[in-house]
Length: 390
Ligand code: ADP
Ligand code: MG
Image 1 (cartoon, rainbow, N blue to C red):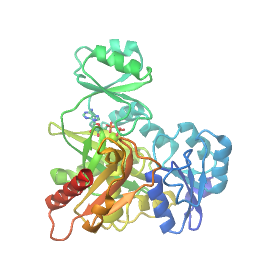
Image 2: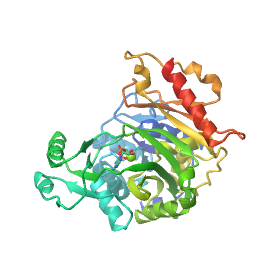
Image 3: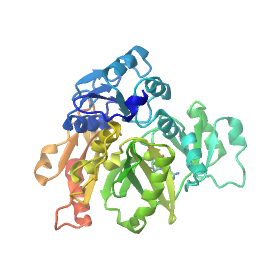
């Protein structure tokens, strides 16, 4: 294992990815572009990445025999999302390379560990308390300003799922019971001015590349738009990139990592760490020579990272959710043909069926030379309108 750790992994070796959603699919595209083959491990027969990968192991994440098959198929594995059981990662890590490490993922996949870790680093985090019993609710200090708050399950939440807004202890208790009393964090609901993310990659040698801070707009807890540049914080870019690098250094992180930041009442707070490429970084697929998934492959294989080489510094990404299929109440296909001639990049993930809130694809709108960022946003809103009104 020790000797494997130092070695650069060269094509046409197989690389492994745990999780076969859209992030796994973009990883697969990048890996194949560099000459690698990919084995996707995902229990879903129809997962987007498995449709294009060389090999698909279609078994549950705790199936040891299937994990042994993964070990036999490749020497290095990464993950597309943080909700892979920590035990699975530890089991694989005994024999093959896991980047980022199970330790880094185990912190990012648990909101309690994550918040405690950030607080210990003296990162700016909003007020929170751990809720893991009725007693912990009764013990909340009366002086603490924690309401209105958001109760979030510590593990397995995503896209705003596993969160309930609560205004007082009675609502908190009901919400905690609705979550079957699993460990949670209760966070003060901040008065958000804006949200942004920093996406960066750290190599085996501890070198960084980063993408410019990305301005994010959410709708019902799900990301809707991401745009660059993020003019509102441009004078502070270096500060937040520096803090995000420090988080990655403290985790001895190898791979792509994103940190979601809040701006509230003029102050900055870390929201959460994503131990993987991030939805907000998808603009890089079309706007940069080297996108976030290329960096994921480079970091995993022990290579030097590449500067992103941004070709379109002004761009907007619009997520396409399953909601669009239900725009008239009953299910019907979106009319993508109506935007085909408008110079946009449409990425569809080939998901088996649309569902409300499900990410089905995204569109990137690239700013042309004579366009301001406002122009690009206007075009994005027009495209959204066309899709919704037809
Ligand atoms: P997820 O893992 O689902 O992305 P987040 O904690 O990032 O969960 O929450 C999703 C979104 O909900 C955030 O991007 C933000 O818009 C909103 N949100 C989350 N926590 C807070 C908070 N403490 N105050 C205000 N808004 C919040
Ligand atoms: Mg989030």
